[in-house]
View 1 (spheres, one colour):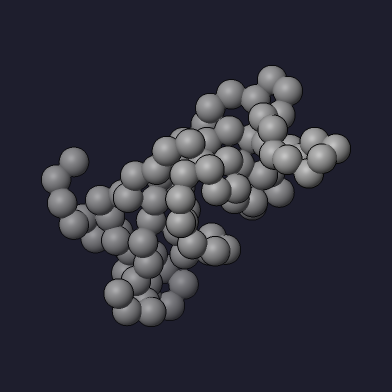
View 2 (view 1 turned 120 degrees about the vertical axis):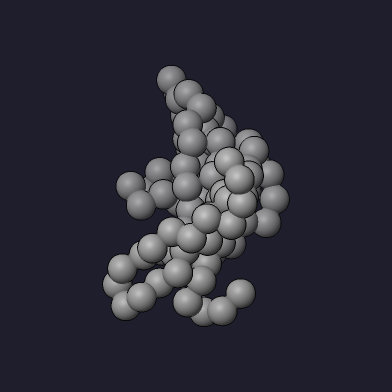
Length: 87
């Protein structure tokens, strides 16, 4: 993949916080949500259970993921989706 293209993933996860022992536990009242990662996401997806920091500074534990059927071509500061497969 060239540096002007990037993978996007769709994650199902839950907001977590650290307990006094430093373990990640679901935040009180947290429900499952979906997040998309892309060009500005820090780090790379490696495995289920991984914790991501969202742009709103929420820690999210990944429960499942799917690679989106899009790849984005970046032209300067404009992103144009390019469909790679059927939906």
